[in-house]
Amino acid sequence: MLKAVIVDDEENAIDALRFSLAKCGGVDVAATFTDPAEALDALRAHADIDVVFLDIEMPGIRGLELAAMLPDVCPNAEVVFTTAYDQYAVEAFEVNALDYLLKPVRLDRLEKTLARLAKRAGGAAHGTPGPDREPGEGRIACFGMFRLLVGTSPLQQVKWRTSKARELFAYLVHHRGTFVHKEKIVEDIWPNQEKERALGYLHTCIYQIRKTIRSFRLEERMRVTYNNDAYGLLMHGIPCDAEEFLRLAERRDPAGAETVADWERAVQLYGGHYFEEDDFPWADPHKQRLLNVYLELVRALADHYMRSGRPDQAASHLRELLAKDPLHEEAHRRLLECLAEIGDRAALVQHYRAMERLFREELGVAPSPETEALFRRLS
Image (cartoon, rainbow, N blue to C red; front, side):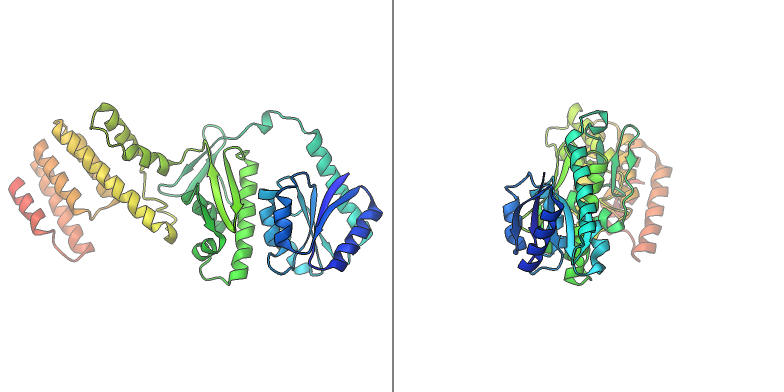
């Protein structure tokens, strides 16, 4: 016996569907609701529901929006939309609806839907754990280009169905462990879209993200959750290069062998700026924070290697820094000091002249008097 819930703002429509379900048989209508918000609260206590019949056009929470929330409150329930309008069909299936029934619901059409539900429920009941159900492996890369990498070694990059689903997933990774209100999300991801349309896009992308997580068997390691009109991404056991970078780079122990090894690992992780190739505007403040941490880290490493009598290693790190931030004048000065310590006057002069040309071409100015005085003293 399938357990069902009906959500429709019209009592007559609820009565008609209950009558049709009774004629088909095999369905126990556990509850009905005319208020979608009330239905959402009630379903939190009913994880045993097999199917929710949802009207799409309702005041308050629309059916499409409620369907996007259901995996958080009633994860095993299938969704079947019932509506008098067929223009929502594509959106309905985007939020993982099992079926889409036009009102008035024909009995033969409803019977086909119930047969599909019974088959789906039977398959789930008889499913047995096996190798294909083992948790998947994954890793998140935020430096350079944002990527979700999955599978076994070598990990493969996930190809997202749409660029906005990919951006939304990056946004949730960026805010991982916290909840962001849905209106703030649409403001950041779809700033120029009309609100209702943007919310529809949000629900579609949330479904695509959840589907991707399921398809790569990552449910035990990451989960998109919904609470109080806000979405959040919970992650456990999925390495993230930006997170690991901060953990290693912000180590404040004295610069001993172990600490320096962690700093070196952090520098290797910083393969490019945060979301550099994607240039998401909402990520700019954190991008700048990570860049500042990276600059301070290279400065600390350069100081350590200079004190240790290894100016060549200090110079190597400073060159890597300048490849990422060519106009960082302090790094140029430090590199000049390294080259002087190495005793390579030709390289010192060559680097200063190249820096001089770069500053004139990019900024229209000469190096600062401080840098010029340093060059004259060292050369």
